Image (cartoon, rainbow, N blue to C red; front, side, top):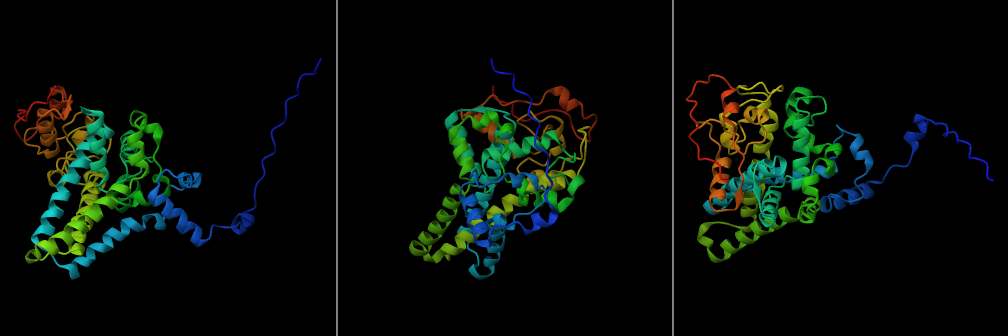
Length: 351
């Protein structure tokens, strides 16, 4: 009969001297560049190391180069000039992609405030991805985390905790924020097509950039009188509109926690701002949203302009989306007396 195994004492913890850590071999510059380039293409790559999650405020400048490059490319407008076709395309892509962020990435993928088909869900994810704000799972996971920890030390983009600049755009440069936390989006991670878009999140933006170049080239060849070129269309249609959409979105994370009016006791610094609501097609009613996140509407009152909601309501009329979650009257009334009529006269949500 075998004797019972005696418990094995755990190995003693050893401490590596700081000198040895400092002298440990570091990845060469070439290896770091190659690693980063692979992560540009495959954001779910195994090269996304555990170290990235342990460095919350450490900026990965190599990983950030494409984002910075698009900003610097906008300066080329000095040389390429402008034309009406280029400006119109830039404006149209700003509107479409801002709506994709606010209506799809935010109100659907992050908050599931309405329903749609699996096919149209994929379409929404693809259009949202063209905004160059990563994949739908990454965006939704970070936003859900923000609502759970709003203005607390764990919040990744709180101007109260880290200051305006970090809350506005610094947080996206942190290594700890590059990962997609699948535990926060189990309802989305079950769709392989969404995981694919999230993993290869530069594929659609690259296709859009090439399309702008192609459109500009075509106009220069067949309609030279318009004064448009391939590079001009790329700078206006892709670079300038992308930067405008990005910073418009970022203002919700930064400015709507600093300026505006707070009418609901949301236990954070979220505020309502008409100006930001106009820039972002309705996202400026941020205090409303933080007080009641489930509604497809963020402009709770009839006079609170919410273009994203109007467009989603029209989409519900033709059957693309449905089950738009309304704002309960008791939530509207909770704000107390405001200096405007309390009648709710926006179109009713489809059911």
